[in-house]
Image 1 (cartoon, rainbow, N blue to C red):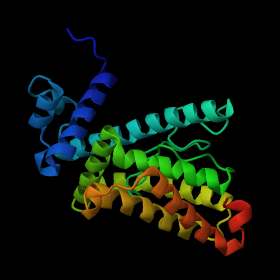
Image 2 (spheres, rainbow, N blue to C red):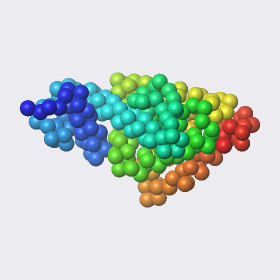
Image 3 (cartoon, helix red, strand yellow):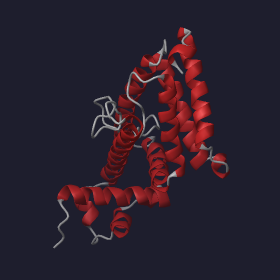
Length: 245
């Protein structure tokens, strides 16, 4: 008998669903395909997600969980290596320094996987964002999760329940992004959060699914782009040099 716990089995099914979405698209996501991808007996996936809607939602939740766990771990490592401390990281949260779960950022496109905590200078915010996005478009596992999330975003346009789950997570992230931007000097953080999210989401889509796949930007290029973007957003308060790095 398998020693896999129910929660562990749910994650196993979720991982397989994410893989199927990334490799075969939403049309290829079936209970049978997930059983096969996970190496489980036929019918197992149905025990954890009875309907297709439930299976899509399970995949979305698993992407959120993975992004959150990975983001917290990586930021913790960065803080330890650079500062010998981890004051900006909240364990188990994809959004360091906040109480919101790192949700894979559906509805916004940004994974909760590297955003610096509030109160950091704009230069550190830019560095965290650049590293986060670079991983999204260069690391094989992160790329797979991002492609799967794009599939879910499109599927959500036709499924109200999935749309609600996707947008609910996105709203939480937009609130957090606005908070960080306000701390960096934005006079209109809610508006600027939309701009920042659109840049991250657009860059990721262009690199993974658009015409930019043959020339994925380097970390240096992404750092320069987001630094300029943040500087422009913070110009509203005339604090480009003082607070945005």
